[in-house]
Length: 392
Image (cartoon, rainbow, N blue to C red; front, side):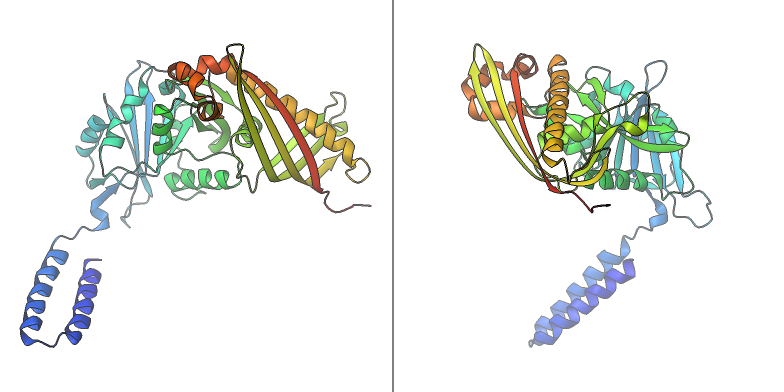
């Protein structure tokens, strides 16, 4: 690697020397080249001598003591395991790094971290956010690493290392990236967590995973309040609805909606699976009777991929109406649960600040309570743009 750098320097100066006509300038250029080669090649670091922490985990043990986990790739050919995992008991992440330094052979590289795992138990502890101080304060840290909530113990995930997958930290990062593209989940970085921490208009949510039978699965989102503490979890379908409410950039959002169920025969269930195409959202904000009023209009164009016990060709308008009623009911139920918990992951507070700033400013320090008392109405319209192929 260091020889490669030297060759680049030499090639670069050969090109320069060809353009320099003065002999004196050529001599100075050669001297400068010598100095650069010495500085570039003298301080080499082999990859085998570096410990790259690709994944960090934070959890609490049964005594409520902080346990920090580290997962690092191994590049030595003589070592069979492609990862090494360590855990230390500490009071902070920086102290944990000092503990790790005491028994790691390589120099720790801080800027390569891909994933930060946080247990639900940590999120249930007040003021847990201060643990991340060193990650934001140290300029060598990566604040673009993905943050994931672990339903169970972080140790179960860190030490799993499934043999049929790539290195676990890379697998976890890829799992979130792919899920984000397909809108199964939404990527949350350290930067996003910090932005939500200081936001007065919305509360945060973080992707959640579960570990079962040596398998790691995406399982919706964990919702946080304005103090970044754990409030509740929502499943994958509710997470997709949350993304539908909070974003208009949903190129590949795929939804499956049950229009009706039959407990006696599951094959009689009316079910529709579809991609959301064009999405238009308008939110009007008013202030009446000492409460905020949000009038939300959602217009969806959908592409049907599956229709069980429904005929989109014969009953197009009927299906559009059924889907409209079901989505409206699901939106109301989901947002009502947010209001009951005093959280606003959708970001209605951003509209309140933009259009009713005078009233929002008075409650800005406790927006969750004000949002809980707000009146929110939904007007959903659905248009079937493509029914799929006709099977008849």
